[in-house]
Structure formats: C-alpha cells, structure tokens
Length: 454
Ligand code: HEC
Ligand code: HEC
Ligand code: HEC
Ligand code: HEC
Image 1 (cartoon, rainbow, N blue to C red):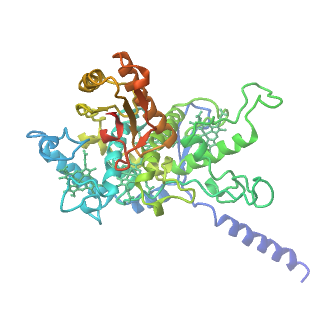
Image 2: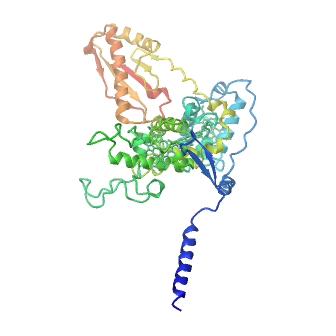
Image 3: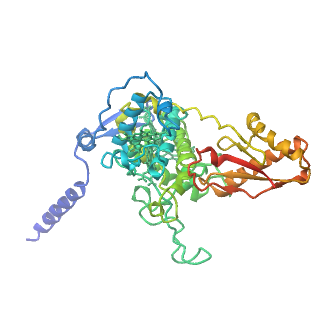
C-alpha cells in the first residue's frame, strides 16, 4: 500500500510530462544553413506542417497570356487614362481584367467604375486604384532592391479582396486623465495583445514604419554608462516589438536575418529587410496616408487614420510573398513609373492668368510663366489696377504642408510679376486655396496659381 504511492506519483508525473509535451511539434525537423558556418544562422522547418500550410494557401488567379503590344495606345482611345495610357488597348484591357481578379473578383468592374461611363472618376475606389497603380509601379522600379525578381502586383497585398487582410491602424491609447498619467494609462504597452502576443509596446509601427525613429538596442560603446550612451529601454522594447512583427510576417525565426551572436551585425537578409523598412515608410507616407480624405469616414481607424501597410501586408507568413511567384514581370504597366503627364498650357486672358505646377513643386516653369504676358500688357495699360494672386493645392495629405506649398507657388508668381517691372504695391497675395474636387493630387487643377486683375 505504502509502496504504491511513489508509483502513483511517478505515473502522474509522467502523464503531466506527456501533457506538457502535447504542445510540441512531432518530428521530423529540418534545418537549412542561412549564414556563415558557426553563426547558428539556420532556418528550421517541419516539412509536415509546411506542406499543410502550403496546401491551405489559395493559389493566385491564372495569368492570361500577354496581349498584342501593337495598335493605338489606350491614352489615345480612352478619355480619362492618366497612368496606363502608354499600353496598347489590348494590354490595357488585360490589365483591367487582372486588376479585377486581384482586387474585386466578386464585385467586378463596377467596384471601381460607373458602368454607364467608364471614364467617370466619381467612385473613390477608382481614384484610390489609380494611385495604387502608381505605387505598384514605384515598388517594382524604385524599390527593386527589396522587391527583386518576385516583384509586386495588386494581388501581393489584396489577394482577391478589396481590403487587404493585413494592415494596421493607430490604436486608441488609454490615457484617462488630462495629464496623461495615473491609472488607466498603459503608456502603449502591457496589454498582452502586442506583436507576438507579448506585453511589448503594441504600436511600434507609428514610430518605425511611418516615422523614422532609430531601430536600435545596443549602445555604441562596449560598456555604455549614463543617459545618452545607450538606447533607452523604451526604444529597446519598441525595437523588439517590431522584430516580433518581422518574424511573424515572414514566418521565420530571428536567425533568418540575424547572427544572434551580435544582432547589430549586417548579413544579406538583414540588408534586404533594412531596405524593406525604408520602402514601407515610402508606401505609407507617399501613397497610402495621402489617400485618407478619399476614404469614407467609417472605413478609418479609431484615431481617424487610414489602414496602413506593414511587412505582413505583402508577406503574409512567407519569406517571399506569394511563395516567390514572379507575377509582376507579366504586367508591363506595373513595372516602371509612367512619365508624369505634361502640364496643360497656361490660361492667358486679359483679366486672368492660370499657371500650372508639377506635383509637390513650386517652381514656375518658363513656358507657364509665358501665361502672364497678356495680363502684363493689360496692367501696363491700366496703371491703377492691382492683381490678386491665389495659390491652390490638392485636398490630399497634410494640410499645413499643402498650404505652405500653395503659398510658395503664389510667391513664385509674385516674384515673376515683380521681375517684369510690376510695382510690389500692385500685387496682393490671397490666402492658400484648397481644391475640393481633387483628392489624390494628380489633377493639374489642384496645382495652379490664379492671377486676377482687380
Ligand atoms: C480596382 C479598380 C478597377 C477595376 C476593378 C476595374 N478598373 Fe478599369 N480603370 C481603373 C482605373 C484606376 C482606371 C484609370 C487608369 C489610368 O488613369 O491610367 C480605369 C480605366 C478604365 C477604362 C478607360 C475609361 C476611359 O474612357 O477613360 C476602361 C475602358 C476600363 N477601365 C475598363 C474596365 C473593365 C472592363 C473592368 C472589368 C473587367 C475594369 N475596368 C475594372 C480601375 C479599375
Ligand atoms: C503594398 C500593398 C498594396 C498593394 C501592392 C496594392 N494595394 Fe490597394 N490597398 C492597400 C492598402 C493598405 C489599402 C487601404 C485599405 C484601407 O484602409 O481600407 C488599399 C486600398 C485599395 C482600394 C480601396 C478599397 C476599398 O474598398 O476601400 C482599392 C480599390 C485598391 N487598393 C486597389 C489596388 C490596385 C488596383 C492595386 C494594384 C495596381 C493595389 N491596390 C495594390 C495596399 C496595397
Ligand atoms: C526580416 C528580417 C529580420 C528578422 C526576422 C528579425 N530582425 Fe531584428 N533587425 C532587422 C533589421 C533590418 C534591423 C536593423 C534596422 C535598422 O537599422 O533600421 C534589426 C535590428 C535588430 C536589433 C537592434 C540591433 C542594434 O544594432 O541595436 C535587435 C536587438 C534585433 N533586431 C533583434 C531581433 C530579434 C530578437 C528577432 C526575432 C524576434 C529579430 N530581430 C528578427 C531585421 C530582422
Ligand atoms: C510591397 C510588398 C512588400 C512589403 C511591404 C515588404 N516586402 Fe519584403 N519582400 C517583398 C518581395 C516581393 C520579396 C521577394 C524579393 C525577391 O524575389 O528577391 C521580399 C523579400 C524579403 C526578404 C528576403 C527573403 C528571402 O528569402 O530572400 C526579407 C528579409 C524581407 N522581404 C523583409 C521584409 C520586412 C522586414 C518588411 C517590413 C519592414 C517587408 N519585407 C515588407 C515584398 C514586400
């Protein structure tokens, strides 16, 4: 009787041990060497689980054979083609079909189009899609250092859905009192819903994939002491949170990109990832965030921000998105940044001039400056008249930045008037004006200065 107790205890311990092991993966386990020998840079896979994972992934839609590149250009035949105008009409249609398969297979063409008039831009989805085409072109050309031979199509992020499955919003922070301290303020962490189900900071993305704060843990000296010599603990925690996101997004361990003997060392995959971080900032700041005003309000996050991209948006658990399938090269229209359409000619009337500017530019092009000549003659003949100069900007992006741009455009025109001998007292500057109709800034009307004789 007495002797059975230790036996029972042993059996219980064995059962408990087995129960704990139930959480472990059954072998086999395969490792592939990733880095220089001796650095323990290896990638571990369980082929059984990998095969299951691969079988569960939907396949991308089949690519239609490339169409004839001959015949008239889409820009000559259609009325409102601003980006893909250089494609042949046949290739253009093939691109439209592919885009529909990638983004809105269930909703069809009319997800972006007014079926009665395909040239109409009234649906926000079409305006967004046009900008997304430009973004994809930049990802395949300017960011080839990251996107490589695999490249990017709409499918990389959208996977047959209008709203990508993986994107991030700025979370609500819990700051219950006005000073931001005290109970209820979690200082952006300790919520156990951070990256990798950890209590690390749950929003490392705003700092690193929108802003360009330093991603760093180690100090620059062997024994850093005192404030300012090492990375502060908050930065270290945020860095680890970001790293958890990297690992999870690519379905890889830390040693995929790091020699864990020295995380700060540079190895090839880490370099690719470094470019990926910079590319991500460009995606969000140049393309996605400026589309915020184009979106319906109910589609924005709790802080009023648009859904933004991070590593998971493209990678979705694989080290190369869509298993490294080289789809992009089959779509000529997505490979290179289309040349910026030339500016429309300036409007030159007796009492009014309209001069156009390039995107983000406040430089008055010489041929646009010529649009002032008629007005200058009128001013000469009417010495008491004054002119009002108004700069316009698009409704996309940061208001303060846009207003500054509109003001600089107006100043450039004012300088041109003064240089032509008009007295400073006869030139009045209006406050910056916003063009409501235009959202993404590709319409030149959103980049104009008007000069009116008063
Ligand atoms: C995800 C959005 C989207 C979907 C879906 C879509 N298109 Fe388009 N379509 C666009 C954009 C953006 C443009 C303008 C391209 C440019 O400016 O270079 C365009 C332009 C066009 C034009 C030129 C119209 C003109 O006169 O200016 C035609 C024709 C067209 N699409 C046909 C189709 C057809 C047919 C389908 C369905 C098979 C389709 N599109 C699906 C976004 C879309
Ligand atoms: C790098 C990833 C990425 C790529 C590549 C990409 N998109 Fe997007 N797309 C996004 C994100 C992020 C949003 C914003 C989603 C949101 O906030 O709801 C978006 C939104 C859209 C929307 C608006 C959908 C809606 O219902 O509101 C359309 C339309 C769209 N994209 C079309 C395209 C087309 C067409 C292409 C290819 C030419 C493309 N996208 C390529 C990430 C991407
Ligand atoms: C996809 C590649 C990738 C993966 C996976 C990855 N990292 Fe990183 N890591 C980077 C890059 C790139 C940097 C440097 C970023 C920069 O300098 O802008 C970095 C920086 C770091 C740093 C800061 C080093 C310094 O110089 O102070 C640490 C620590 C770190 N990673 C730890 C980890 C850990 C732990 C994991 C696993 C949870 C991990 N990383 C997974 C790419 C990766
Ligand atoms: C716009 C889509 C996109 C986004 C966003 C993106 N990547 Fe990539 N990434 C790719 C493509 C495409 C490849 C494959 C490149 C190739 O074929 O060489 C790739 C490859 C990589 C590789 C090399 C994988 C290998 O097996 O050689 C690393 C590492 C990587 N990405 C890290 C990141 C990190 C970290 C982020 C987020 C900061 C990120 N990527 C965001 C598209 C993307």
